Amino acid sequence: MTSTFARLMLCASLLCLAGCNDGSGDPKAQIGANPSLPDIQQYLLPPIHIARIVGWKKDETPTVAQGLQAKPFATGLQHPRVPYVLPNGDVLVVESKAPKAAAIKRPKEIVMDWVESWATSGGDTGPSNRITLLRDSNGDGVPDTQSVFLDHLNSPFGVALVGNDLYVANTDAIIKYPYTEGDTKITAPGTVLTPLPGGPIDHHWTKSLVASPDGAMLYVGVGSNSNITENGMEAEHNRAAILQVDRASGRWRIFASGLRNPNGLSFEPQTGALWTVVNERDELGPDLVPDYMTSVKDGGFYGWPYSYYGQHVDPRVKPERPDLVAKAIVPDYALSSHVAPLGLAFYTGTSLPDAYRGGAFVGEHGSWNRQVLNGYKVVFVPFSNGKPSGPAQDVVTGFLNSDNQARGRPVGVAIDKTGALLVADDSGNTVWRVTSVHPQLTQR
Image (cartoon, rainbow, N blue to C red; front, side):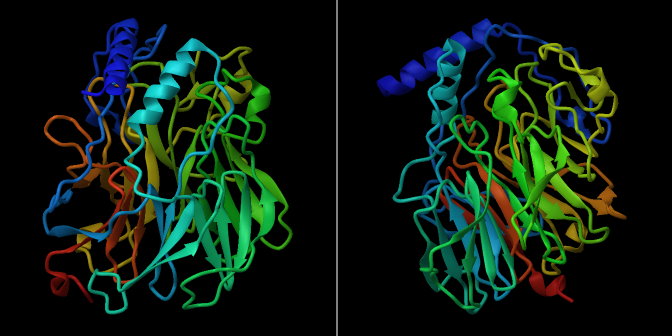
């Protein structure tokens, strides 16, 4: 055991002792439209349980649901966060590292930042903050072209293509690049469409991005700059929100607010509604607050920081805002506490089994602050008439081994041109491709 790891284990143990009781309940009781919400627990220091990253051994692959199989689509990447499928079938993989944030001075935050950054990173394998292109010309799941498509980016995350305009959401700006179908590399300099809230703190740095179905607007998720405003309200200016950006002018407005860390922005195909997955607040207990997925209403307020899951008041936030609490929207669907959902993709393909048609795949990065680990998998939520219609089902698991060590951690998910599910694994430095065992039986 390295001295660094030993120190981290000691810090984590001390934090767990300071956190008192961590009687984690049944995570399944917090999945669905009406999650169980236990009493609040407050801590001097929050409990931390680290899933040490060990990586994938040779020939190891994730475990998948019956009728599916998983194989690596690309390996040896550097923190792949988001797969994005272009109209011609090429796959862009956003590889990124977190930006350097401003110095954190309070003892609790020093320890938490140190431990969390160690626990959530993977092994370095080379340059990052770039986009890699993968081209599988014959659709056999083995790319015959892999090239650096865009380089020297600033902690990129979201990507959206509209016509010949490719937009990349760096941590501090949306950048536009010219794109021609079939390009394997972009060398033209990008232009700033609009700045985004970034440093100097930049607590939640990922900026999810999606274009409206008509291409006129871009929607970008901007996470909060703290857990619960401990860095001051000024640091939260235009954060914890989804911004709507006019693609022609770059002008933007807040589309929805009170969303602590919205990611995975996607349009539900049947209704055309915008959906997101949200990482909720910490330090209220192992089973508070459930992360969730929800449709997003124009002008809607979803509670953060004043309340959670509708009108449940967070007593830590002063001054209180009963006027905002009263109008806080209850999310559509809870995913359980601290699963850290980062990816969302609706299934419109035909090559996976029929049971997946129309539902949503969610990539859950996994918990770090509860004794019983939660998340670390990709789940599927069935939909009917544009709404969740049943319990979440485990689809891609095995990211944790029998010793609760992390082989990898799923982030973004996407559907490729053949209808296969792509999963970016930012700690295993791999993009996984999940297909049907017998695709000829499900294709139409």
